[in-house]
Image (cartoon, rainbow, N blue to C red; front, side, top):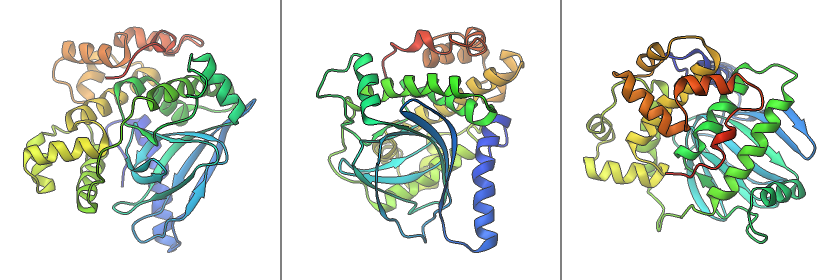
Length: 322
């Protein structure tokens, strides 16, 4: 079960996946993908996609009919494209050019939930041009953007919209669709492929770590504990985790906590200090500093902006990744 017991918003996202996995188990059916349309506009759409496949299910080659960007909201899986094989974890982006073939598999754990944006090629071309991307560079040159700082505002906003939106929400999704397209095309150009593919055993151990952190990001995780649970030395575990996920364990845990904080700020009127302690920070000044680094504004200012239509993340569009 992936339900995040410490946060109602994130718990709502995970509970949808949990329910689908439980139904599959009780019914004895094979894994499958269920897609629910959330919104659509002129040349774009966004779907809530829940996959219940697991290690026993076969994977099949598929094709991207449109330009595709999917935010991994819960769970994990392997994604293979012409750019290679990547492990998709919460907070990362799956990228696909129109016409490209791909394959998704769940070799080490069952289930995932994604927020999938689809763009007509000419619409995406226009969005990339508006974002200042040169002609000839307006297609993805990587299959994944890992859960880096530059994605945090967009992932948090989309997760809140998924957990709380009710029709009509097209205007909210329209803004997110434009912002995530511009950010994804820029970031994909900076992604580099690891020189060699990790072993299946390494992916399995890191997947187990990711799932454990996802179940409760507020736990006092230490590198020593994670490495010990994976059966690796500290150095080997750190190198393997970063190679597979694209970030360090510390960055992954911190980012997961801050995303929960951002979602709580957007949906609750709790005091900042209570949110800080609730997501695992022991010092509110450290929380404020970390939040500002991640989202570009202080927690109270973030809350004010996400509560004001038209200002959501508008000042963050020029931030660069770290």
